[in-house]
Length: 107
Ligand code: 2BA
Image (cartoon, rainbow, N blue to C red; front, side, top):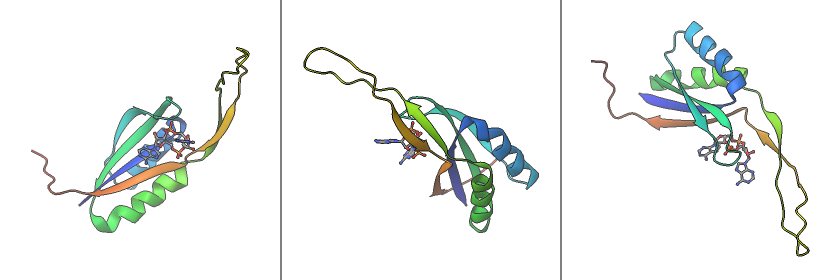
């Protein structure tokens, strides 16, 4: 058994979980925050048998889109001027981890 953790954009979360459910996969959605942008994203947990991992990853890939995001930053100059220096980063589609599960039980 494997646990898939997928960090995705909030706007894609509904489509990802709906498609997982449609294909018969259970999932749990957590509200999370990225350490770099400090903005909200969503982490989806899916527990599956090893042979189903690729199917789940394909569904996540299909529904997760990358986006360009501009973040404001400021720089201190020697003469005390703090101009805004926006930086653009590409976020997503999805950051996916697959980990081994030692034991899985529903009680
Ligand atoms: P954030 O940490 O908010 O990062 C958002 C985006 O900012 C990243 O997109 C990447 O393009 C950029 N970025 C992150 N750290 C950076 C840095 N030190 N310097 C320059 N640019 C940086 P993604 O790579 O698509 O990541 C999206 C979200 O996935 C991340 O949000 C974080 O919540 C998660 N994530 C990505 N890699 C991870 C990892 N190795 N471990 C845990 N979470 C991760």
